[in-house]
Length: 121
Image (cartoon, rainbow, N blue to C red; front, side, top):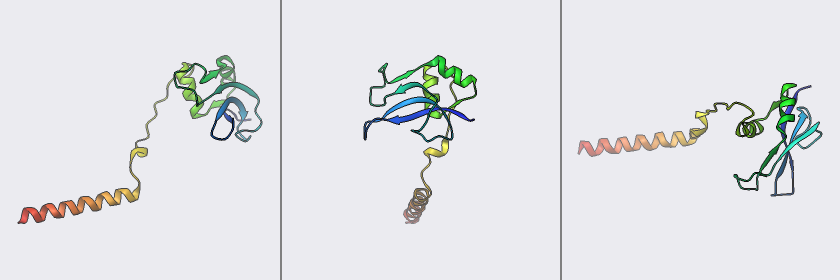
């Protein structure tokens, strides 16, 4: 059974509230879970102690049994000092899309032509 430590969404519309749970990876996001391990309230300020609450001992127990935390939960664990910080680098994310690159190339070509015409005069 593939275990995940992930977020399960609760709360009403436009008012999210998440439970940090240990669940079988085949279950739906808000569906059946095995154990509640903590909470996350994104509406609270970032420096608030109540924003992320975790039972670190139980999380370490589940990780020792082979559960893998999702990216967001692993960031919480890194902030708590439970897991070593991963190096994340996605240089492709900052690049503009294909159409924007084509427009930039056309603009650069027009500017080069205008510069050549000005130099020829």
